Image 1: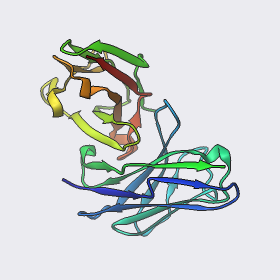
Image 2 (image 1 turned 120 degrees about the vertical axis):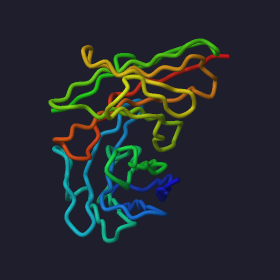
Image 3 (image 1 turned 180 degrees about the horizontal axis):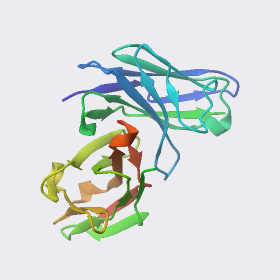
Length: 116
Length: 114
């Protein structure tokens, strides 16, 4: 089956630093990728939709300057948390869209970000 | 706007007993409905979907779900739960008018006790 690789799985950083999270579709081309944020014991909140070769579409309330998304190729999207603060600590999950139906939405294994 | 509600934060069931996880939805058009499962510190795994056709949908790992249009529900069921079914379950809906974006319910934690 299709695989989405997300890296790193866990990152601890100091407040004020930037963190980059990579999401790769390993055996298919993903024209669209989604970035979600999940707080403990809560649901997934869609942050943004990343389209290859164009600007990402951010959900209401998500700071685009804070969460930079780059979808430079059909197999890679990156999320950079700039000037991270403790409130940015969360579980971030990417997903890649493969086809028309949403079961072709494959999820990465997630990145646990802890900002000290 | 589309929305999904999972009224139970947690469901406890004994191994071997039937398992039901409830989900209701709201969309303006025809719903595309999904169930996903999440194990600790992992991404989501697709279980099953309803697009059209039979109201009873069978999915992975022995799970099934019944689409009920009049009650706007899509409850997840398994006739005989296993300890390994203990996980976080998410119901999701996609409204065609909203493109490929999925809206997730709040999640229900399932705990199957031996």
